[in-house]
Amino acid sequence: MFRSYLRLALFALGLLVGVQVPGFIDDYSKRVDAHRIEAELGLKGFRDTAKRFFNGDLVALVGHYQASADPVMRSDAQSLGTLVERSAFLEREANAMQGPWYGQVWHLATAADQELLEETFAAYRYQVLLAPEAIAWGVACALLLAWLLESLALLVGMLFGVGRSQKVQQRHWR
Image (cartoon, rainbow, N blue to C red; front, side, top):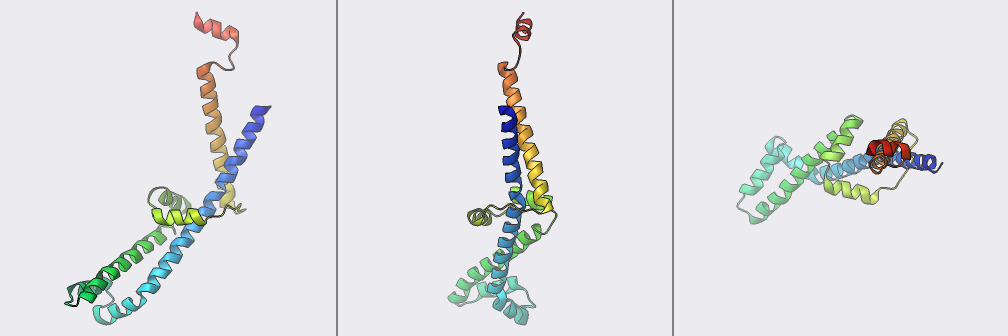
């Protein structure tokens, strides 16, 4: 009887963990978009200048700043270069989060920006979404967790002979 309740508890735990996945993905996507919009706003004036003098090429604008004899312009070239790189990175990150759900999960697991992940974890509030994808994630995680832990318990039990009758143990020791 206790084993049945333990299974139910593990299933419920897996369900609750699983329904968090779509919410976290959504929060991460929103955070990336917010940073991307902020980076674009910071580059707006520079983009206008690049359009007027360099056919919209921000890299050429950075190169012009770096080649300048003015030390202030050279110093600003490094700052502008950083802004341009950050904007391009955030654009790539936003594009990665626009793909299918499995691509988003893979990206978060393998290639997501650590700083953005930490920001998202810090601000994340646990939620129970009743969207179809959250329910699917919840059931899948619940079944997987229950199956893995029960398999592990059975394996440990087999190794230590738990659940075998005395007669079976004697037959194997002969």
